[in-house]
Length: 323
Length: 260
Ligand SMILES: [Zn+2]
Image (cartoon, rainbow over all chains, first blue to last red):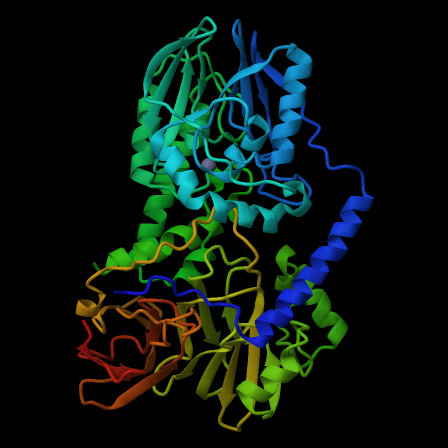
């Protein structure tokens, strides 16, 4: 039987020494942080249409400054209670989001939807553990498989903001289709490409579309778990929908196709560009340092996200090149 | 020509702002570690046996600032115009196994690119030995603390891995105004031996020969080189055909392939 784990294990003295050192540094940082004001995301919801609100996050990457608030979460006020879409990057975010919603609407939350298994979209789940948290079976499987690793990564990236956060698995499997909730006609659409399972929520009553991370607006798409061809196919399907407003996973709310076109153009360029680098015989470290087209300079954190894309996609592309 | 430590320090800070372009006619050489790592003295001893060293910007080590996937960190080493290079050693100060690869460029360009595994943030260095016995050292800090959307490495864990062990695929690109580029991939698990219960299992030696069987270059690789390693080398333009690659792993499995 082939052994599957080949990670370096921290058995040697250097590692132990460095771990002790890291813990020490973490300790010092923690003291400094707790001396500072209580970590607050200062969430303020913006209305999309009457009764539908969004907490618009930063279009940067995870940092200790933004606490991982780089994501859009949303809620719909129905006559049966509030429906929440995504819960943010941490338990703390989830709690602050819930407090805000309950105190401003005076209503209770009846349902939470999770669009996909990325940590910035579901790690606030713990704050809603008394509410049904629903998603597609593919999303739930993704969280089961990778949720803990994502959580560890976010602890490393945003530190104290993550205090007490655990990967809380959604409690309800939802199947694609239309249903009615509190007077809203909601459609769940199962797509993929940004991840193996991307859940899109379309509110026919208000005309607001929640495409999750299938659409980025003025922000470079993240491709860590992407299948670019599938993603492009999914965008084509979204373009057929007759929505009034779209709440992208990252970036400002928009009423036209612009964000979808941006996302589509970047992804198709990226795919061709990396294939071309391979065809020219470039090594991965050379692909990292290639120039990027001026047309994408309006996308936030372009260079940073492009480098991550090379690191995430090139190894598999290289392996496939010779298969 | 050398510059003082303080200048070198500002080089580091401002290089990201491209100010380095304004002063890059100066080849900085110094005897103080530009990466300012407390580990330098140790690796100087263990990797270079305390032999004479100069930090030299013309030994260009490219690694990303952040390792998204610690199992697949790309690195390339290119040595600029400092004379004939006898050997290049690539190592990472804070890796559990520091030694990554030794490259003897022989008759080919002093350039190599491949991927390797890291455990934590570390300086990544290359030392190039010139004929006078001096090691010219370049390097870069690699941050390996978490990577947001990075999936944990899903092992290739194929049931039939033994069938493909040691298989080589390759391609040679002839390029305008540049050396030819050779890339080859060898199927091999490259187990580090540090995961419990899994012994070290890795390619030890690779020799690149021309069609007459004369040795052009050779590589001694170690456990940190990534699984199914993928090497890039540069060769004199339009000179070589019918190259062969031979070698073996630490269990005596042979590698022998005429490259395409
Ligand atoms: Zn995502």
